[in-house]
Image (cartoon, rainbow, N blue to C red; front, top):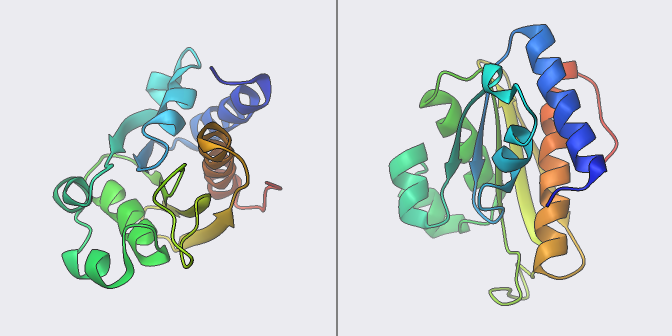
Length: 168
């Protein structure tokens, strides 16, 4: 399911977390658990991975991650603010030190002129640290968008572990 490049990136994230004594969590919407799935594809990941939240619906984002209804109503699920709240909520509700959140429109439907298919918002944060946000508009079909989102999420986790920019 995951290509060698993604698995190498996942290994780097796990090794970085292991070396820094960090546990991680994910909060995923459009990727439907693919980020945590890629990480747990690696044997021994259980010493780093705390849990993964798949919050596809707005209700799940609110109930499981504490995303504010006001944020969803005003900006929509696919927004910077909601991605940030997802990452912060995942940290607050887990034993993890590091979180990444993904929310977007993988398609083929669901896009609008303001929020086209392929738009994905990401947020990553370390406990008690700032929340880093990225916005990408990925080309391609549903599979391509979702796998590109996994790559970006893993890169953001690695950047948060290493505290240095990672080329995506």
